[in-house]
Length: 165
Image (cartoon, helix red, strand yellow):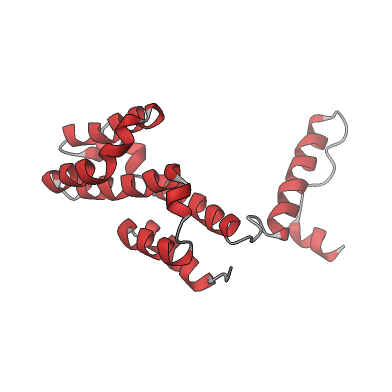
């Protein structure tokens, strides 16, 4: 399978810019069956669009979108709680002040963008983490473990010093 890096960046950009319908369209071009196979990810993307509609004051459109695109998930128990949380946003004039405010945060969109990035990489048989990411993760774990042992703190970690070794 051919891996198209610019499409991948476009998908992530569209998610972060709150244009999830375009992200879904590009995902289907890059990995045609990914969203059908990964219903959790498809649900997350559709939910982001619902949130955008609610936050922009288009509650009627949000309800139509939910009925057409999210209601099929209502028959699956693991989605029911999530659906209730998303639908609760409709009850607030200012959704960012609701108990579900985290669903409209940039952090939440970044989390979904990261999930789709990893899913597409796995789908296209690419490593989901770069070698440098893995190395830094391993070094962090070792450093944390060593810092928990008495008298083993050592000097603070410096990536520059590590690379120069």
